[in-house]
Image (cartoon, rainbow over all chains, first blue to last red; front, side, top):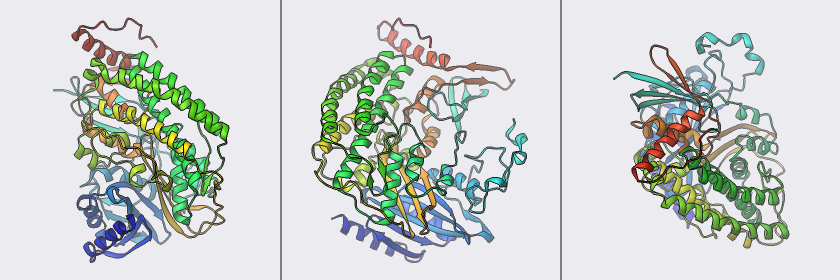
Length: 164
Length: 404
């Protein structure tokens, strides 16, 4: 039964999002992966969140060497599916429209991706650091593959900024 | 009116992790609040990229002392999703038993501490006494009271034998009756009703907007439960229901937790009685192919989400962990506005079951005069309010001394 339901979700999404996505795949019954251009991402995610009534699980930023890939994981609970919206932001222009300015649930995870991977979210209402210390040097992004522990030494910490 | 900033933290008085709340206060009322986290950032996601697939469960188990089995569970489900392997029903049911035991002990821990905080030390003592039975069952079944190390990608590491199953079935009954008594005592108490009802209301709309999880969302009438929404195959035959309350206040969240304990007891009994004999408990995963997988499971506090990506090597290329509190903490912005300081301390505890780490609350006004409220003072503030309600109801407040 659940199989039929899931096929319907797939068909529905294909029809509704036809002009906005690059491709859509369903490798396993409960998982859908959608690839989207960075400019269209907020539109697609907002559609899924409001109209399709998905909840936000989280978003993942991945350093793919040619750019940073961001995956928004949204769960459609009544159909028991996870819909993943993927977008690749090139290193030459590391910025994307913020979804957090409209949907509160996205604010924290966008702050985390910003400090960990250095992606700018345009229009985010509160882009302070979330997890890293205020004294942590700027321009260093710990979750990038190029980051090494030796990249940040004690001298790099700017304690004046954190008010210590 | 002059606005004052009250820092609550950096060691949060109520949750077990160091968190810093800035309360913007006008008189006694909190008008806004700001949450700062990150004092406990250990870089587990980065560390995970340098561990092999089999080592990661032990690492993620140490993310949290109380949800110590939900993280490995979600991680294992993510890897199994990536590899596409099916595990036996016996292994699935054993996973269910361990996870539900964890849920009961976590919920009882929360109930006890909530009781302590509002001045009901009897509730505290009771809840923790009965929690002990659960921990003993855990020890008998898995060898440890916490950090069970039971799961691995593709199954479980240790099987239950007959003697262990009998012990668990016998003692889980012992615990059901006292929890029933405790629940009735709490739900019938007019003082607890007055103290907790209507406090820190999170509306259904806010719960959806913030994507709140677990008892926080279910207390607000949003029936999200991953065990129900994305059940394991072995879970489908078991009979249970999702507990949902409509009001969204601290009381509702407490009721959800208490009633969930009974569902968990029932699930454990059903799972242990229906364990299929003679099935293999694990699948040997020889290599993890290129690809990606998501795993999610309902921890005591809400959905735990793990995402893994593999480039075909023996280590994850990326491993993302999202604990439920990450989604639940921002909801305070909606639920704490307009409440008093004595209540805010309680509301911030209502999403999470641990508040034994009270460090300090400093009251700072603009002239830099500082007043430190320690755990003792914070508990006293809350207990005084309960006693006030008792006096109004014509009851005698308890005589015991609140010195800690």
